Length: 167
Image (cartoon, rainbow, N blue to C red; front, side, top):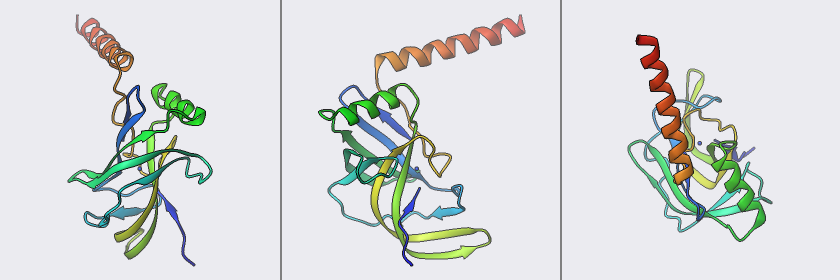
């Protein structure tokens, strides 16, 4: 029986543009799947951006998807004219949703111990999710002044605490 499998780092700006690593190479996900470089050989002009892999929850479109040395990188845009997409945007900006996950069907794989090494697959969708199957498939950063200020505050607090501990 064929199964659609769900697996995914992500940034979003005020206009709803999202960039992230949908699948990082070099390690297994929680199910033991390892996808190799070259497995994402495809020519796609756009891929659906879903929320939590729900086909009825289309929130955007991925317009650029490519393999890099680090993994599968995707760039797309939330459909900000839709209330649901604006809600997802808010969840990303607020840090409630920080991951990406891919929906795919393997075309070629082998078992290696507890892992499945996938060398070819069909990619059907990339979802914005709270808990991705791959622990490194996370939102890269949020591109906004508010987020940059928050990160700067965290760094300043952490370094101040370190200085206090060493004085």
